[in-house]
Image: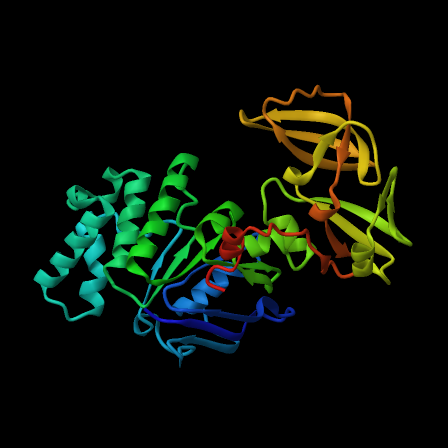
Length: 380
């Protein structure tokens, strides 16, 4: 095991005579040994570039990458004691599963053939593919190929485990199953792990901590629940969570927030957080909006456009004050498309962001339950 640290890591691509392209800008992350970090963000945000730089497949323009306190900027990939699993598995088609799993050991270690074979068989049994070692990749299913690729990395017994969107080629059901398997493996092996994905559901369910990137810049790093309930800015709030957080652009008028057809009165404590702001963005998650009868300071009329039934819940897509929004309602609650409803936005459930910078001015109140607080601060 090893700890991993990125200090002011920057990656710049110089494209001929054109202006340089900054792939990653001044990234600082510290990962303790045995932790599971997920790098998440939209395409082009710099997450794969960061992973490849840790692996030594990309050079470092500025800053440092440290493994167990040692700067590895100039170390060759084979000297970093890391193992990487790629999106496309990268299995040799002419080799059996056994040969694929043992190839790296034979190339980079002095282990005897018997020791290599013992290690491969032990890991294959752990991965549930012990009876497939004689098969070639074309004879294996997608999930089996993924297990071979993971096994090939595990037999290396690396200090750091790197995974670059390893589940993106699998169907939804198998992805969910493999997510659980990878989590269990990481817990059992206790290997420091960095996992890259664009899927925020994977990020929320798999990582001890998640790091959200956008445009090469780190937006927030924290536990999944911290990023969900206490986002540092509007980008994080909108990216983490499915369906996404609803946003209303509002003008500040004394202690009221105003938009088309909506007046939202703030309590003194909430108003203090927006004092001095001319415009703010009010955010609220779909599950925090309530269907109510009557009206009040924190309600608005909305027209129902579409209902998406999912069994236990329905997603109601509506429009209020010229803004489209999504509301999560119980599956047994009957609402007709085209009807008008009254929605309540509880003040203790709203988030407020600066209209100028997008930074969070205040986040929703958090449950006081001790077990929830423990989850929120996990590995913090």
